Image 1 (cartoon, helix red, strand yellow):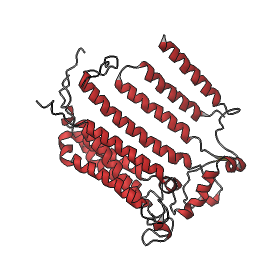
Image 2 (cartoon, chains in turn yellow, orange, cyan):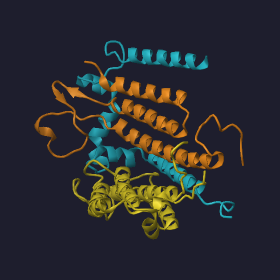
Image 3 (cartoon, each protein chain N blue to C red):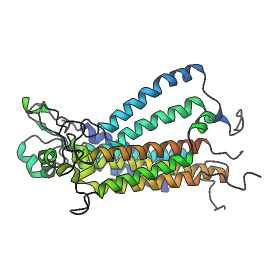
Image 4 (spheres, rainbow over the protein chains, first blue to last red):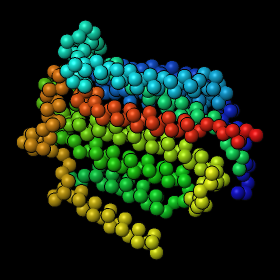
Length: 159
Length: 120
Length: 99
């Protein structure tokens, strides 16, 4: 190709300038709070586990793009995030097996249980739905951030 | 009444399959798979709409304001199945991008006419 | 030669699909009467009227995804886990590159 330099494989280690870094410092906490609201109120307003997890992953990827690879690799330990994804899946299966004496997916915390038993319309209602929302949100967020950091840290072949 | 939703969905599938036949770059083929996914999801969601006289349907969420006017609720079952389909589309795209990165590393270019023999 | 045949068959399929979208003798877009709703979509009607009493959540879509059809959500979580594990495993550094 004429007029193009060969890629050195080090383009992701430089950050993006002062304006982008300042705006990222302002908006990342707000995106995090909004994503946590979508996950936790999944049984009252539109939202749930998958939608809130994707929003939180958006905040993580904004941090990776605006601050460069060196700062992101100090904060994101890839093995811990892979283990967190497995923990999220196991909590989801454990909540489904709580009412195993009647059926596989029986909602035993809503019909006769001590915890999530309140009036329909409050935050502590609807059986095992808040537990499952939190587990799926954690799984989706950690999975997407681990994939993004793995793609950015790949040492490319000098072509 | 021309149903715009069905026409848009069929056009999106046509554009995706056209790009899958005629383009040579590997990244453009992955983008074409994503466009086909979007077209099919749009077709599935617009199957559950409902009108009662002059009033359009609202979202199926009990908020406490329903019994005032008699507004009907849209069917919730297609929305639950499309949620699963969107997540599966994202997973296929992630795996395809990582395979494309490895193919570039072995062959040196992203042209599908140059990837003919298996190389270890 | 093969590409011309592919393009013509693609145009033929698009033309037949646009004939299906005609509301007189094809797919109907929105139901307008209660009798049609109760005949063709009785499952949706059951989920709307009995969802609040059986499960307790105000959001009917989250009700369906996690309680009435929970098996599909388990399958989708497995697919997501497998795809991400495969993508991370393919992007590890090789020992031959580091010489």
